[in-house]
Every structure is written in structure tokens, then in C-alpha cells.
Amino acid sequence: MRKIELAKPQAIIFDMDGTLLETETLLKDVHDRLFVTLNEEGLYTKPAPPSDRLLGCLGMLLEDIWKTVMPDSSEQARERADELLLQYEIEDLRAGKGLLYPDVEATLTTLKKQGIKLFVASNGLEDYVKEIVRCKNLEHLFDGLYSAGEYQTKSKVDLVALLLKEHHLDYGWMVGDRSSDVEAGHKNSLSSIGCAYAGYGKQEELVDADAHIQHFPELLELLANCMKQQ
Image (cartoon, rainbow, N blue to C red):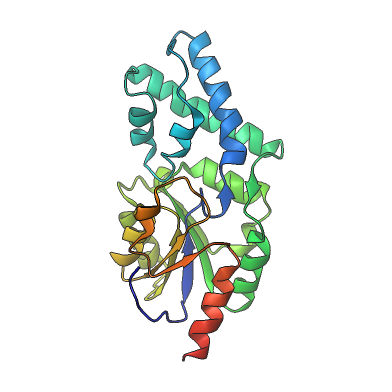
């Protein structure tokens, strides 16, 4: 882990899957339904890959996910998988499925009260990211929701750069569980906070993060410590 002194952020930018949302609580059922449908439609008739393979792809751009999950599939099958993934995710979110990590809402509320601007930057689809925030009643806490699906960015680095430019931000924290989040923070001159609690990626992905948290509320401890030092 890099050793730097954190400064109080103007803004904190959060990844979604594996950071705010415990995605496994939503995606396992979605995964099973998706591959049943692909099989019924004759688009992918081989045995369904394990759901852990899909979970391990969280943080990738959607176009890269299916190449990893089912590399032997047709382009038609991948396009249909895109449609079904979004459809089933939104249906299940509206049915109340999918859990936030413990104390996410309370922690975000405390950060907001301290005058810190809060954002989401996700490589997911626009409707998916916005539906999570809506269904979990978090809309009032965020100053902006940025997704690769909406802005058609090719990397998390580009997405975060766009967010910073549009909101005239000079310094903040990037919080996430994958190497793409660490990279997006550092290449945009932000401090990167690695979320070590998700387990969807490999531990070494977060080795270059400036700080690590094992539970979401530990962000408040990091903030309190950096404010003491100023």
C-alpha cells in the first residue's frame, strides 16, 4: 500500500458493485434466470458457467464481461445477454432484492452532512445504476451518477475525469473494490480507497490503494483522522 497522508476531500466518488451494493445478493438469481432464458431461446445451450465467474467480472465494461463469462458464445447471444441482464436486474431491484453493504446509507448521510459532495462512477449501465439508487432511496445523497453506459466512456479513468471536469473538482477520494477504481483515482490525482470487504476481485488489485477499509463506515474514521492532521 502506498503511504500518503490523506487530505479532506471536496468530493468522494464511489464505485457501485462491490462498494455500495453487495451485488451477489442480486446477481446470483439474475445469472440463473439469464442462462435459462438463453438456453430456451437456443442462443447458448451449453452448461451455464458458474455465477462466481460473472461476479468476478464486476468492474469490467459490459462488452468485456461476456467475452470472459462465455467466450465461446455468438455475438447474438452476447447482445441478448446484455438485454436480459438489465431486464432481470431491474425487475429484481423493484421487487426489493439486492442489499447495500451494512451502514452504507447512514455513512453516506454523515458524509453529506459534513459538506462533502458524493458521486457514483460505475462501469455499469445507466438504468442499472440509477435504479439501484432510486430503489434504495439514496437519490437525495448524491450530487451526480456517472456510468459508462450513459457516457460511453472506454475506461473508469475517462469516466472520473469527465465527472471532475463537469463539477469543477480539484481533489477527492475514489472509493472502490477493483484495480480499475485505484487506477481511476490515481490517474486523476485523487486518493484511492480500496474496499477490501467485497471479495469479487483479487486481493492484489488493491495493493496500490492509499488506504484500505474492511467495513464501509471506516470511511468516517479516515475522514476524522485526516481532519485532525490539518
